[in-house]
Length: 107
Image (cartoon, rainbow, N blue to C red; front, side, top):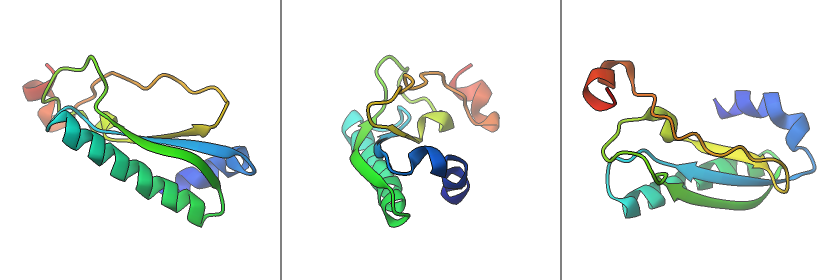
């Protein structure tokens, strides 16, 4: 999946400094989710560096404030990458549950 994304954005990222942030859903403790988000960010940062890109910063945010606890939201288990100094969209706070969990988790 990362190879495909890199192909789509290689021209935008070439020669630029990148910022990488890792996130987690709200299952588990906030401390664990911060560590998990950091590991996600590190994996993607290492991948980008291996492809010759410059990663200026990477960190784990973990879970976003304002989300309900114990939400199974796959769209929150992600890494965002953007060009340093460029526009960075605010991270999505919407919970999009896995289809089989929709009735149990976020409904």
